[in-house]
Amino acid sequence: MSDDCIFCKIISGAIPSKKIYEDKDVIAFHDINPAAKVHFLIVPKLHVESLQSCDATHQQLLGKILLLAPKLATEQGLKGFKTIINTGREGGQEVFHLHVHVLGG
Ligand code: AMP
Ligand code: ZN
Image (cartoon, rainbow, N blue to C red):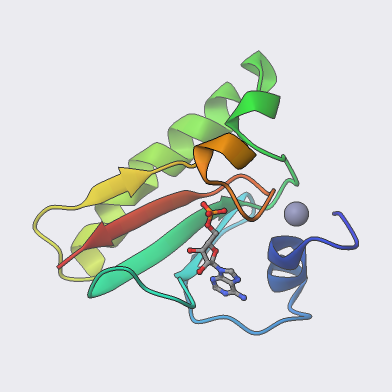
């Protein structure tokens, strides 16, 4: 948990979100500024800044997030989708809590 992180605040419930999935490790919610008909984010509950901050200890969590993408995309009615992980300021990342974008439709 990072006090000034917007996604940590969503995870704690301090900021509302349009949640589509939650378990002990992960939350997924619709992007507030959708770039496609369906656009949601899959976010680990653990505060990790970005893919660049990940190491072997995050391997299982990363795998879980990737496997959730097609499951949740199908539930959202998508037959295909794009996944994006912006990494670092120069990679277009704006929220420094790891997340996978899923877009389609
Ligand atoms: P990125 O550029 O990969 O860091 O993307 C951050 C994404 O988070 C953007 O697509 C934002 O629209 C989205 N976002 C920011 N604040 C919120 C929020 N409160 N609820 C849902 N999505 C958000
Ligand atoms: Zn965070």
